[in-house]
Image 1: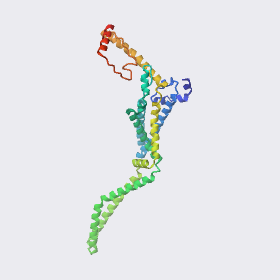
Image 2: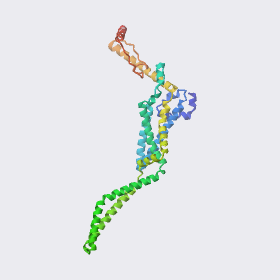
Image 3: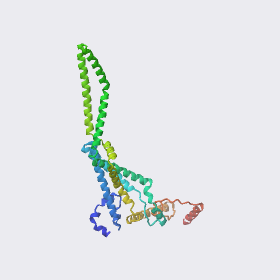
Image 4: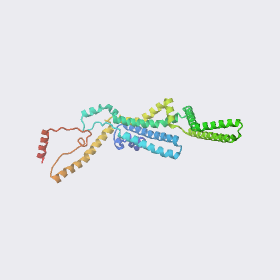
Length: 344
C-alpha cells in the first residue's frame, strides 16, 4: 500500500479503474502488482474508444460530406459502441477463487475449468467484440489504402458509366429506329423530286437531335454522380481482395479489442484483489443478514409465538453461488419434525 501511494501519477486516474469495473477502493488495499495490469487495461479501453471515434467519424465523412451530420452520427455511434463494449467487459464471466466458505475439492474442480472461456456465452461475447473490432478496422483500412486502389476504382467507375450509358441509349432505341426509318423514307421521296417532304425531314432531324441531347445530358449527370461518389462498399471489396495487409490490420485491431477482456479474465482467481473482494462481499452479506435474521425471528415470535433459531450466512442459500439439492428421506423429515417440536 505504501509503495502504491508513492506512485501518485499512476494512481491518479481513478476513473480509469472504474471504467473497467474494478473497485478502486479495494484495489488500493491490496499489495498485488496487478494494479498495473488494470491500469494498462484501462488505457487500452481508452485507446479503443478513441480509435472507434476516429474510425466512425472518418466513415461518416466519406458517406455524407456534411460536418454536422458526421459529428452527430459519429458521436452517437461511438457512445453506443463504448457502452456496449464496457457492458461486455463488465459482464464477462470470471470464475471465483477460494474463499473461507468453500472446501478444497470445490476449488480444485474450479481450477480445472481452464476451458470455461470457450463455453458458448463467453464465445458469443468474444465474437461480438471481434465483430465490433472488424467494423472499426474497415474505415482504417480504407484510409491506409485509399491511394492504392485508385486504378481499380477508376476502372470500376468507367465500367459503371458505360453500363448506364448503354441503358440510357436503350430506353430511346425504339423511338430512334422509327424516326430513322421515316427519315430514310422521306429522303428517298426527296431524291425523286418530291420537295414537300423537306419539312418533315427537318422535323425528324430536330427530334433526333433532341433525343441525343437528352441522352448526353443524362450521361453527363451520371458521370458527375459516379465520379463524385466514394463507393464505400466497393472500395472495401477491392481493398480486401487486393491488399493482404488489410487482413493483418483488421486482425490487429480485433486483438486490441479483445485484449482487455483477456487481461482481466486470466488474472489469477486467488489474486489479493479478488480474494479481498470476495471477503468483503461475504462480510457484507453476513452483516446485513443479521438484521434480516433478527427481524425474521422476531416476527415468528411476536405473531405466532414460535421460537426459531435458524440463521443464514453467506455460505448458505440463498447467498451461495451454487444450488446443491438435498434429498430428504421420510426418516429425515420425521427427525427434523421431532427436533423442531422439542425446541418449542
